[in-house]
Image: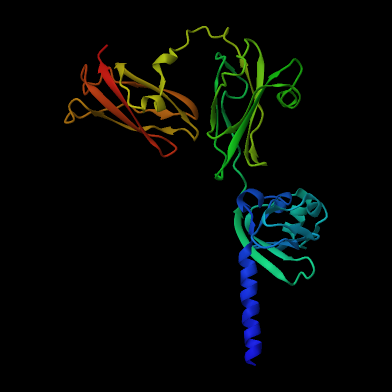
Length: 362
């Protein structure tokens, strides 16, 4: 009896040791959204070379068992191992009988739901011999549209090197980057055709923020030409989201009124660095609002005389996209000529920025 207990303890200890030496790496928030993504897993092997199979079972909280995938045998070596393409192509996929399983089989992607992904590395000889089993959970939500902001669709602009902005991809996935593609639209082409067939004027990958300053290496836009652009959100080699294709035209001839002096609208991020600027009765700055229209929350405090109170500040409404803010203080008796002030603004993304200015009467 004692010998049997010892054998059992040794077997358990050996199993735990092997399990600790092999692990599965899978990112459900990226790859758990589609049928093809399930094989984007890797196996870390700290033990010796061996032949295994990968068994993947997916269940949903309400839909029950969705599918089961079993690969043919393949070899894992010490280190990090991807699933061999041959094993992926030859894998046996068994779909469940429910409506959700049928939807996934027809469309290839997972609808909204709470999913559990069970990854088991088993012996190639006996599938009942489980080397390691790991469970991943993820709530799959439909991605919000990746909306472009500026230049607006079918807009006419007069900037040969425009600032390009778009809504951040949601839900937010750590490590998401953006690719922006822009092409010229030829005669009798639709924007989509142009994007698919024409050589890109701008093709920028690895963008980490939802905006792109026009690249200095790209040729300036040409008067009278139409352009199409699109933004893709991705992580690694996987596309997470993609915007619609928008178009705009470079047209300076139709602007009968003189353009407002852009030098007066310094970006709030530049002003945030701490440099003073002189406000001749009006505080001017620019910011991008990627959210819905809303009031700008801000305060102004006197630096020269901290006891001085500022009252009756103008209300400012932010539109979606790029905003050129004018805060007219010329008739506000709270402000003194030559005094220094600091404006603190709460931005729609939750950040706070401040800018310093010297007020001058006009």
